[in-house]
Image (cartoon, rainbow, N blue to C red; front, side, top):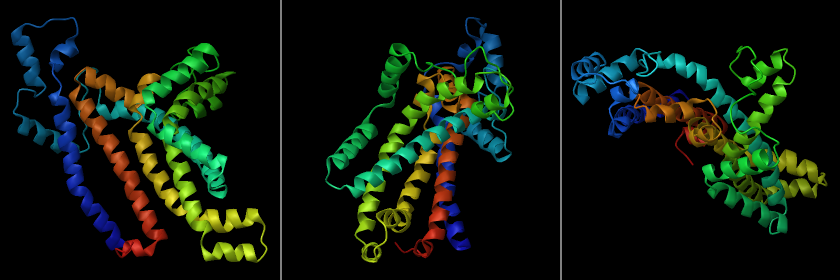
Length: 337
């Protein structure tokens, strides 16, 4: 198992190098002067502008800037924001819980409903239910996030007035930031209605973010169930006279969940790293919106850190899934399939 883990870690080295190159280079392809963006309406004379550029190290050749960037990373330094002049790590720590909360809610929604729909479709293969579930899954997976989010806002928020449009909690509430997770902090506070407000603010973003994952889980669950239901041990369990519920839950679903869990793990990394559009649409103050805002401001250190952290999150989750899958299936540790 140790050799398997070391092999997986070794393959990450070139990936990490590539990520740092992408994080460093992409933002510098965006036209615009970060100093001018940072200063806003204030105008600097050429000498003051040059002095500021030199102080921030932006006058150095790109290879020198990249070497300095990597050197700081190796010491755990993500740099200072060009706009707020705050440590990037501090800003990240303040915003990351919002993204985790949103991704967790989206994942729960997707997994619970996806398993239910996938199992039902697998048990009723060829039925109207099966065709409906697969049709909805295809639509859900291919639906643009920004369009889906705007449609839900127009219907549930504007027309029906059931849910808020943006933010994490109503402006009339200000629960103490104990954990950084608004639902928990609102529940711990003594403000009446705070938890309900936080929950209502979370519903639409979680639904939008989780729709694609729901489609993937439903399709994978159905496919896996169809394969498992044809196995000899399932037919034997039925021949023994076991109840249909026991056959499905104990014998079929438990074995069908192995590939589903792998997909869920991969989708978890995607949700944490890819909530950019959802957070932007709903003004959700997480790392996705933070990254988009920083691109517009040419805030190099923040964009570099955002890309790097998002990629590392995705890679970390994938690595955990690889290791767990190697534990479940020893053939993978030995290179078998």
